[in-house]
Length: 125
Image (cartoon, rainbow, N blue to C red; front, side, top):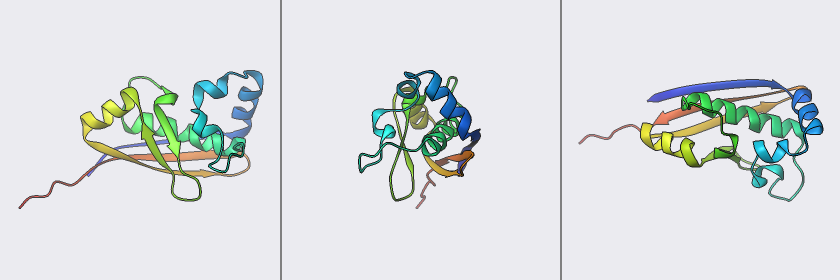
């Protein structure tokens, strides 16, 4: 059963400009684990943009009252991305009894993400 869907799209250059203007912004939007790949390389801004879109999409899918980007951590390199929820986002997922599945994409100039809040099917005997 699908309990919620969220989608977000953004211009990669817009995020790049915002990060350049405000050096502390990266730490307010992304957890340290999201700054770099598992190999320790800095992430390209288009990858960060896709992760930002995922955070917005998860916020919409869970119908959260406020956008708290550090409560939504996008994880995974080299495989399907997933989210690790913290704080109010984790509490909301537990309240709704859902898990969140995401899909990310990015091109040179744009990034997008979709999030699905999916309730596990009930098994009846």
